[in-house]
Figure 1 (cartoon, rainbow, N blue to C red):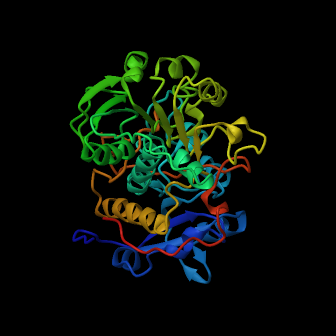
Figure 2 (figure 1 turned 45 degrees about the horizontal axis):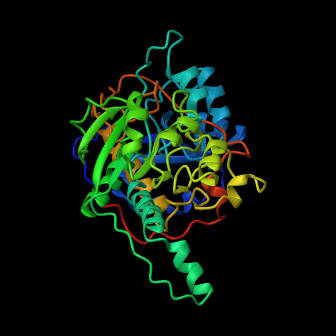
Amino acid sequence: MASTTMTGARKTVLLFAPAGSPALESIPRDNALLRDHVDLVRVNEVHELEEALAGKKDGSALNPPDAVLFIPPGNAELLRKVWLENKLKEVRWVHCFYAGVDLLKPFISDCLLNPDGSDTGVPLTNGRGAFSSSLAEYAVTAMLHFNKQVPRCQANKAEHKWDKFVMDVVDRKSVVFVGYGNIAQATAKVVRALGMRVIALKRNPNAVAADAERADEYYGLDKKMDVLGRGDFVISTLPGTQETFNFFSHAEFGVMKRSAVFVSMGRGTVVDEDALVSALQSDVISGAGLDVYQKEPLDPQSPLWSCKNLLMTAHNADYTSDYFSLGWDVWLQNLECFLDGKAEYASPVNKHSGYYRKTHYFLDFPLPALVYFHSEVRSRTTLSQSAPKAKRKSS
């Protein structure tokens, strides 16, 4: 990554993250862009923020903050407070390290949108695209888990049973993607190579020009009851919004094929878990794979644990050895746009919907962001006190 137009003083980026965040171990300190142009200042407590706002940190002089980087579970309430107190006048860009921005709703509503709902013009970006490849692998794993009857194979081995059953294939089967952003398109590329048909349900079925991997068919989300029944596999990558809450419930599972496999890896709030349990127990659908849940960590008493034909992972499908380094790569792409004063960002977010935004921001305004993760909300930093070491770079 190189830039040729950067000029002026070093920029100060406030990094809201707890001191023990494993993401800090993967900061790309040798990157020339970061080393030569940016002072990255970690804050998370009142005294740390006050020190940074006073222009000092660890004895070094700092310029006023120009941007904010939020890494959950950073103290977003503190950030919101100082923003509303008008103490971050020079901040002009905020980035959320993760792709999901549903937890940022209070900040976005109070600080990044005007009272009348109009956009303040403050750029908001996210980690979109950093983790699409690993989630595509997970989706295909879940599909083949049921298509190849892996549980049956494992049971046969345990019982020393020679069971020469007819093995199914995915070739010429159809996948209905509900939500068709980066993750879905990365998955579509893989399943198409396996000979599968790609059907996309998306918020705006006419906005396909930016799709890196075109679907064979496009429909609006309002057509779900007509389209879900066509999928041998149904994959949800929907974000968590008011409009998508319990998007999949009894009626939706009811119109799917009895042989269908449902995979959810966007946000758990889009699935009515009681309805899914009922669908699996009553053989309304053949199987399901879940990486995300309504409430995380999942309650040990949840009926999902004992549900048959359910593949479950602990929201770690994309928690790979290079998880944090990939996230930093996306941040650096946006940082270059910010430092160059470009009109376009690498991963802009629409503040009203939480979706990827194709219309780009201009760098004329102040900013900041984010939200405090409560104990019931999953934070990747609680998965491990130290992140796995990065082994590869983003492609």
